[in-house]
Length: 420
Image (cartoon, rainbow, N blue to C red; front, side):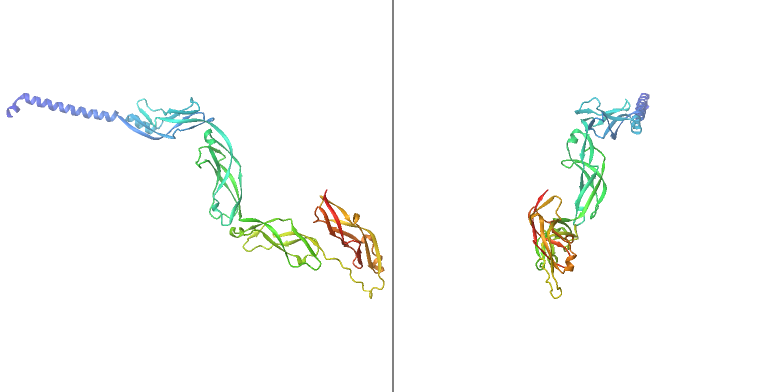
């Protein structure tokens, strides 16, 4: 070993090997330094917006994603510059394609030629359709469980009533509902008005991607307490006066609306009005005040008019006191006409008996009283406001001086009523 160390060629060989190793090591470091300065790198640009070029006035495009990822590879300085500057563009150009389905590539622009660029996805399936506009009626949509107890929605009013919806033809044809969504808090007990957003849904209640004009409408909601309309029934109460006959009681009001709890109103089938017939003496109409039933909060009417078909008690002649009247005389009026009063304009009457409605009237009393009576003091009439078409028998009534006793040749007339 000592001999080898003393050999100059051995030392020269060792020195050469060390020199070679040092050269290789230095060269490797230099190459690594240059690679770091000008080498390649890979990066991903996420959520890059995709622009779509097409005729958006007459066409609608679906299938193009709003954003994509872009992988870039190349010199580190160019990769870093692209991320920072963001002057690149990702787009799909559909301007030369016809209506229908297409598979198209996503294109890029403004990336350096020294960069390798690839979008994810590379291709997309798009559908190009005709853009159409159509008017639809807007229906109000409200959760009626928000109403206070015993309250209901009486009506909705929407303004405007229709909106214009624009979108792809296939989407427009799939529209099932156009709703104005009404919002509110629990316990609604009065009418209100609000601006409501319009929603467009298909038959499965999925929201559709369309344009709406206008996007909101004005909705008026009429809220009322729960009510029920029931028929009116008249019930006679009491006993008619001596000689008075109640032929018929009627009213032109057929129904009345009651307000209150649903459980109570649902049990009410009719509204009974008690009519005290002991106070009725003559035919005609009169008002009856209505009594509100227990539990009912209010009614649509507080009184109604009742028409009474009544035969009054016969008029009796007062006895002549011969002790006080020494000289009783008579005065006759042979042709006194009976007037028909209260007959509706659309009806006309004809006398059957007495002929032409003429009767005779006799007055009994003192000569002094009879001298003051003329035919102009006597008015005979019948009330025909409740007469029916056909033959009617009506009692004759008299307006005349009361200081004498009157006798008539007939107590009633027979009329035939018919339409004009």
